View 1 (spheres, rainbow, N blue to C red):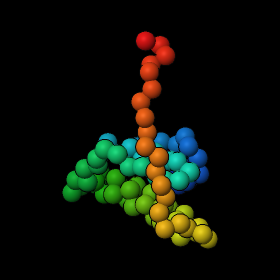
View 2 (cartoon, helix red, strand yellow):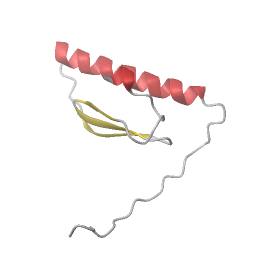
View 3 (tube, helix red, strand yellow):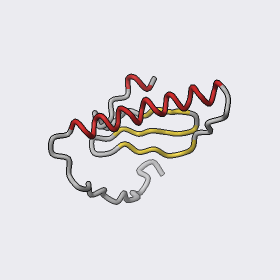
Length: 84
């Protein structure tokens, strides 16, 4: 559940809301995919879950005493598959 997801706490947590994947890192939270917020109870439940998650991200950022202006993201590379 989203309650257990602590933004910026580790490099391991992955959460799904609909088809939206939220990856936790110590320097960023990455959202990829999509979530469809239909105009029904299911859509409301997803919207509330997403709202709670974003609220915790905002609180974590606001709690930082020395929040940098920007974080430099390292470009990921491709390595040769050692099992091929």
